[in-house]
Image 1 (cartoon, rainbow, N blue to C red):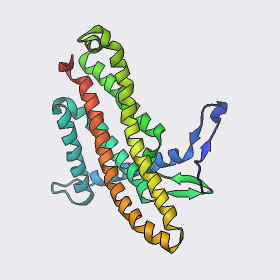
Image 2 (tube, rainbow, N blue to C red):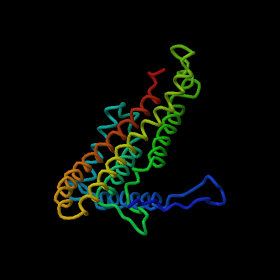
Image 3 (cartoon, rainbow, N blue to C red):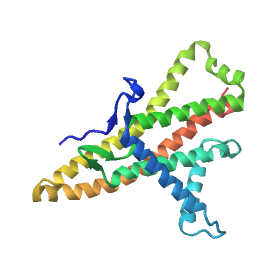
Image 4 (cartoon, one colour):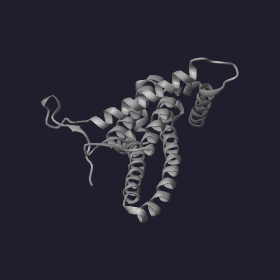
Length: 241
């Protein structure tokens, strides 16, 4: 049986504008979980962290390590809120789809928000735009745009193409991994529900792949955050020009 997405078309009477209600729901759920975890981790700060604070401090140190690997901390510390938000949002979003898939009236409502190219490309576009913004802010407009014509001016078109390529690869890498994992899980669920033999042959691979998908979800959150900081570091580094 094929399932569709709950899509509202012709929003505000615009023929090409449509809204995927599943994406809206999952973005809200993911953001709410990230917010709640952050509040719990910082609600009662102690010198000797325990529980949620301990987990949040571990995540904070992990993300700080990512930033330190891409740029000096004096420059990179201002990007810590962005990096930790990206990491937590993508991590939680990846894991939500691994846990279960919710179907109602033949429409998929509960899935990984990062399994949709619209969301992942939006995230990657946001990162690239912020990279340009901070590059201009920290290096100066003239100095920044001059770097597009060095070392040779005729390389300018190639550098423009590179910006589009970075946006596509950053977003589509995350989408491809999460979408493929979700499709395989759905196939294993279908096999598991097709009789006793199907259950025996599908249950074990399903559990194994589900565990592996949790690992992949964490790796993809790390890769996206790392590459985001690499792109930003490339733009804000004065020595690049």
